[in-house]
Image (cartoon, rainbow, N blue to C red; front, side, top):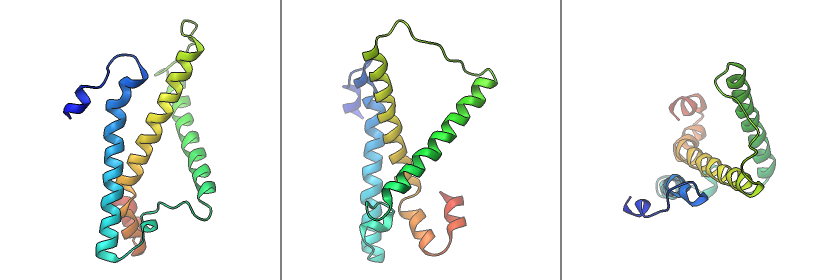
Length: 141
């Protein structure tokens, strides 16, 4: 964690690296360990983790993005309607600042989602699902 203390802090895009790096590291560890466990204990291929760019992966990815976006927008609508959040037009920041903020936010959400998926729906979930224990897999993960 000493490396994270050396990263820039403040209101720049780089200031979010301390948030992104641990998620990236945890994703890599979950993928590597999941692959090793599957390979060593069950002689399974890498695709058994549920990570594959074959078949209809792009359609599944798109459906997942749409479902996630609908869930996110629904939560925002409920929060705004209940008075817990409001939106305002930012007339002080330039287009570059707003674009940078949106792109950095997208990267943070993407890395966080990959981390969540690899940790909670990786090896353990796939192993339980292969054993026809999907309800248990869902409850445990």
